[in-house]
Amino acid sequence: MTHRLAFTLCRVAGHMLPAARKPWADAMTAELAHAEDDRAALAYAGGCLLAALHERMCDFDTRFTAGLWSIAIVTSLFAVVQFACAAHGIRALLGARDGMSEALLHHGASPALMASYEAARPIVIGCFIILGCTHLAAAWFLSRTQFHRFLIAWCAALLVASVAVAIQLSIVWSIDGVPSEFHALILQAVVLPALLAWSQSRHKYSGRI
Image 1 (cartoon, helix red, strand yellow):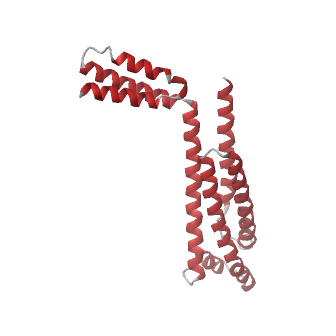
Image 2 (cartoon, helix red, strand yellow):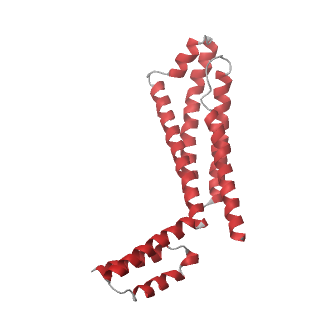
């Protein structure tokens, strides 16, 4: 039973090894057959498992993939936030409390400005919904390493974000003391592609070494 467990651990270690270290898998299994007893075999298999885990963590392709997934997860979280903002806006349209409207009134917004805000609110809500969808699509394409489709989705998100920013700032900048809600969109539009470009450049550089 112990020897079978050791053999299973060696097989798991072999599957964990990166492609460049796959020949080690056969060597691990062959060496296991020369273990003095079951206890030694189990200790050896445990060492193989730790070595395979170390090699996997040091493998650049693995770290590159993990980086892509990290960016994809962050992008998905942005999408969740945008859907939440859209849901809040829809509730406000249906009569719920609207913090931005109250802030505008508190800072002395004119009736004309409030009318512009009310007219623009459905458009901004639509922008949030589209942004959420495009960011989910971008996250999916990135997780599948479909970089060209990711770029298309990101460009679409950037275009929609630009429209939302232009609409919102045309209202908010007319009132002193009311903060912009869309600065994070501008930051995101720059940071995510920059991270991806950096990851790809590191990946290509590593491939030439």
